Amino acid sequence: MDLSKIITISGKSGLFRIISETRNGLVVESLTDGRKTPVFATERSSILEDINIFTTEGEMPLKNVIWRLYEHQEGKALDNPKKDQAAAMAKFEEMLPEYDKERVYFNDIKKVFNWYNLLLDKDLISKPEEEEEKTDGDKEPGQAPEAAKEKEKKDQDQ
Image (cartoon, rainbow, N blue to C red; front, side, top):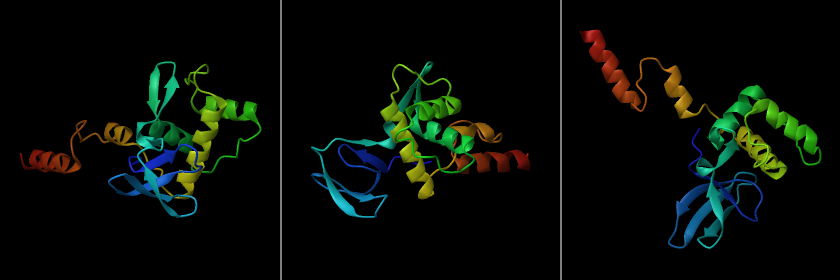
């Protein structure tokens, strides 16, 4: 899952895809309605790739949290948690029992659920790369796919 081109902008709802960079900021496209707008360097924005969720063991990247949600929901959308705080918190704990209950607030969980639904709707959810590397037995961690194929071919030739 590549979240390096998806951002959230403070004061604006939804998520945005980076289309290009300008001298003064970025040009982005809304994932909800497809509108293109400029984002200036003075506006607060965050790339989803850089967002982490606090856990009792440290921090977990958002892409891993989204993937856990995807697996837990079996690829289905979540109900909107706007009003039922207790149900949303219970659902999040079910999916990520190690989250830090003192540092992750209901508003954070609402955002994660909304982002999950939006990314799911746009078919942007896929297995995180770290987990793909662990499940691929022939590939050494951090090794490019081409290098793994070359290594496999070399091993077969011997």
